[in-house]
Image (cartoon, rainbow, N blue to C red; front, side, top):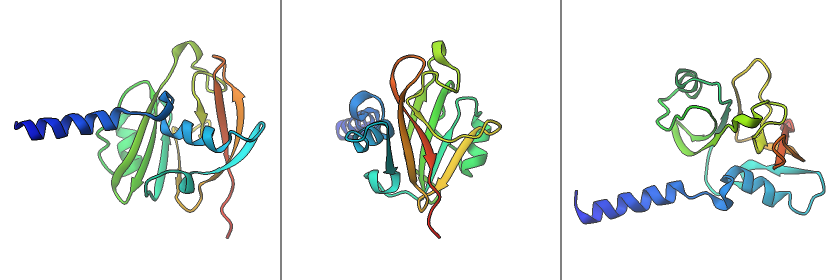
Length: 159
């Protein structure tokens, strides 16, 4: 491997590992958009994210690699166990992903260690939406570990 290739590889790895504010881009985007609001606000993820995407998937930490691959319709190369996964797709390509490790001292889904709670139904392992239905009401609260978190409820798209 040439020096230039090695340097480019290191820069790409560093850039991919950076997370704004240390809590993840999705959390930071919601937190910034809701800063001036008291307990609830509206956030449009399509308008707020700085990249182009057409489908969002949020997987519960219990989803297996096979379940993630099946839902996405592609092979997901970034899988890690014991973490929620936030995946943005453009066509069949992952344009952004974020793993949110579960904090086992607060694993309970009604207020464990998560910072952003997407509306995953009790009998489901993931939530998905297209980029034309990305407005959410975000309710600011504290989870069982005392961290500020957001509970999201999707607002139906206008017809």
